[in-house]
Amino acid sequence: MPTTPDRDAVPAPPETVRLRSTLEQLPAYVAGKPAADDGMRRFKVSSNESPFPPVKAVRDAATAALEGTHRYPDAAARELREALGTKHGVDPSQIALSTGSVAVTGDLVRALVDQGDEVVYPWRSFEAYPILVGSHGGVPVQVPLTEELEYDLDAMAAAITDRTRLVILCTPNNPTGASLTTEQIEGFLERVPEDVVVAIDEAYREFHDPATVAGTAGIFRRHGNVVLLRTFSKLQGLAGLRIGYAVAHPRLAAALGQVTVPFGASVPAQAAALASLRGDVQEELGRRAVWIRDERSRVLAALAAQGWQMPSAQGNFVYFPLGEQTASFAEFADSRGLVLRAYGTDGVRATIAEQEANDLLIEIAGQWRQR
Ligand SMILES: *Cc1c(COP(=O)(O)O)cnc(C)c1O
Image (tube, rainbow, N blue to C red; front, side, top):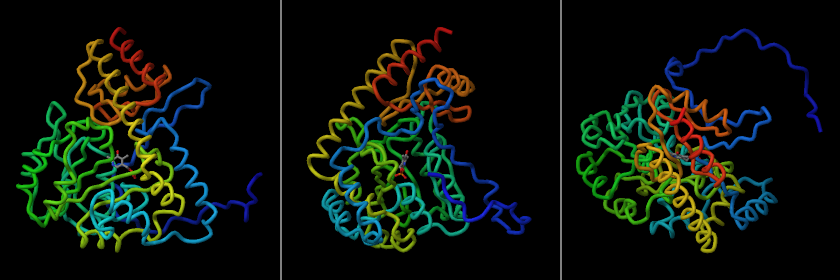
């Protein structure tokens, strides 16, 4: 049914408002490209989404919760925070929720960063970071990854000044795939002043080789300045519902609660997140993580056989460091049915998705090398 307009559109009056000059310097968040609508079948593997729809029990919980959406959500999200507290072995007061872990990262910036304060993070990394920091008047301090696309923790430690309030470690790193070990993180923390918060963004944790994944739970218990950032958007398949959280020191978690958007975590999002933590759902999600890891190994082995030298990949994605050829490779793939994520003149990221899409990625990567 067409929407009934309240009134016809009229031209806006002349512009008179003054925007913050900072906005001119902010990079735009380039969302994963949607597939073009030209009749060709395309796979959108540009946003690291799950190829699986939410688990049925989760979908059912979210749908049932819609019945209650004439009411505001529980602002304290008591049930969910208790369940997350149990999962992480912390008090529920140490869980801070919002509309995705990007929003929680923004809350961290608002809670910690005054005008001109610095936030240190690797680059390339998640492109939301410069926007979250810069839009709040913070100064982004981007520390280049090494040539092998690994973390340069010496350079990151050296980049910390007395204006640094926050350091972000994204592990596995989006979009390059590199990850940090427990020892690396512990060694780094020894060089970070205790009043500087270190946020570990673990959006892709479940896709990491479990044998070598960093023991962030232990790290969190040993360091009062460490915050863990987690999302339901990736393995849990709830990207469209928007919910994520931080595990933090009680004082910092309370501060995040002070600055966050009230009622951010919606009624269906809270219900879905809670259902995701059920044992049977966790088992199903665990099987999905194994499937994605196996597919990632299969893709990487095929690419290696074609002669590609790929950086280590521990997320649900692989990264082609193509430099100046980045845009042409993305176009090459697009015209063959695969929508990838291109990063300037750095490289291209492809999400490990349904098997057909992964097969197509292998095929296209092979064609590219033969062209
Ligand atoms: C996808 C992603 C997130 C999760 O964002 P949400 O706001 O929870 O959807 C967080 N950090 C990184 C690095 C990501 O790639």
